[in-house]
Structures are given as C-alpha cells and as structure tokens.
Length: 118
Image (cartoon, rainbow, N blue to C red; front, side, top):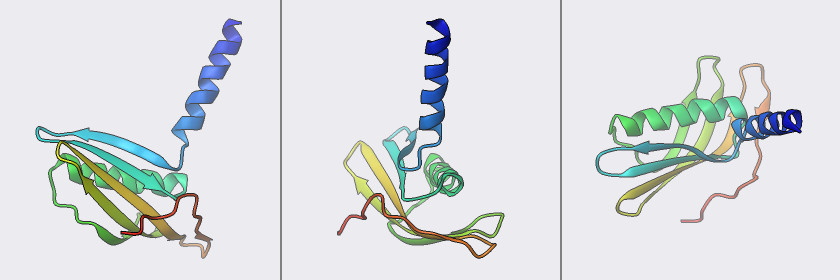
C-alpha cells in the first residue's frame, strides 16, 4: 500500500508539474497579490513566458495589456495577448498564446481556452 501511495503521489506531481494551462505563479508584493496564468502554450514556452512575467511583477516593473511577441534563446517565437484584471488587492495577469513558431519551422497553435472578448 505504501508503494502505491508513493507512485500515486509521483504521478500526480508529474501531471501538475507539466500542466500547460492555468495558474503559473503567485507573486506577492507589499501592495498586492499578483496571479500569473498562461493558456494555450506548450510546456517550454509556458515556463519562458511565466518566468518573464513573474520576474517583471516581482520587480514592480510596468506591464501593460495587449499583444506580445517573445523570442527565446532557441529563436522560438511566441505570439499572444495579455489581459490584466486589477481587483484592488489582487491583480490577475492572463496570457493567451496565439501561435508558437519554432526555429526548425514547426508551428504550434491550439485553443484549449478562448481569449476573453473585452
């Protein structure tokens, strides 16, 4: 039974560690709690975008809503749109990936979650 529990916990952890949609990180500052979510991305680009946004938030750097184009160190291009919802003590940053273009010519595009309309 103990082995089953350990295997189950490892499996559960690996599933959530590889999650591709939803909450990426929580960054608390003196003034607000900031939630960063990434949607419709693959795993590696999710890490890249999430780390970028969390770093900006933790340094209190200005982030604006709108369209973004990222290029990582492997020359992978990520196109998407950022939505920001400020609810007083909590700010939600939602980034929706539109398309990923890899340096080898492959493209990645999926709509597991539809972008907000406003």
